Image (cartoon, rainbow, N blue to C red; front, side):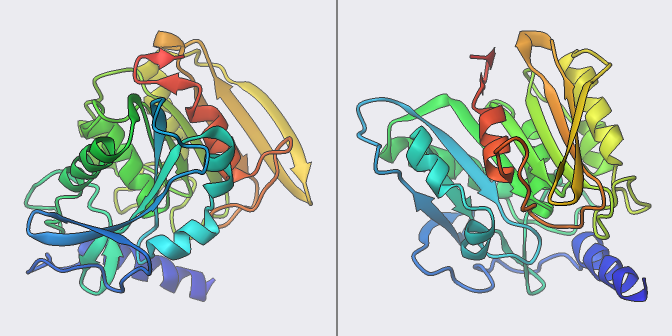
Length: 298
C-alpha cells in the first residue's frame, strides 16, 4: 500500500505539478527508426507503420496511438501492437512521441492557461502530423482515429474535445479526463468512445481522484449525455483467465454513435493483456472505432 501511494504521488506530482518547461526540447530519448517533424520550433518524432496492403489507390483510415507519461513510442508500439491489425484491415498506424517536460516525455492535455504546467503545442503537432501524413499518403480524412494509454488516453479525450474536426472516434486504456478538460470540452460532432479501465488502477483511480481526475463513470456519463445515447447500458460479462470483464454498451446515440466500457475487475494500470470474445485490447478498440467516421456510424 505504501509503495502504491508513493507511485501515485510521484505520477501526479510529475503530471500536474511540474514547473513549466522553460525551453524547447526534443524527446528525452530518441526512438530508433523514428521520423522527425519540426513543429513550433521543436523537432518531434513519430513512428509510422504502413501496411503491406496499402497501394495508394484507395483512401485508408489513420490510427494514432499515444504512449503514457514517461513512455516512448517504440516501447508503446511493442506493448500496444496494432501492426497486425493494420495489415489485416489496411489502415496506416502512427505512434507519436511526446515532448520532454522536466526529464519525462508527456502529452500536454490542457489548453493554454496559467494553470497549465506545459507549453508544448501538442494539439498543433498532431494537426501538423495528420497534414503531413495526408500529403504523403492517401488518407480518408473522415476516418482518423485516436487511442492511447494513461496520459495518452487523457490526450485522446482532449483531442476529441478540442480538435474534434480531425478525430472521428476515440479509445482510452487506463486513462480518464481531467475535470478541466471535461468542463471545457467542446466537441463539434457526436463522437463514439470506448474506454477500458481496471478497478484497481493505482495511478488513475477508477473512482477518480482529488487532483482533478474525473471518475470513469463521470467520463462515461459525459459522453453518453453528449452523444445522446441510451442511458441504460446493455451489460454482459465473462471471465478471462480468472479475470472478470464487464462490458457496458450505451447505444442509439446521435448519428448512431455509441459509448462502450470494459470494466476489468481488479485490473491495474496497464495496457491490458485480455481476451474478450476472441479480441485483445487493440482489436477491441479497432473493431469499435472503425465502425464510425466523422459523421457517425458508417
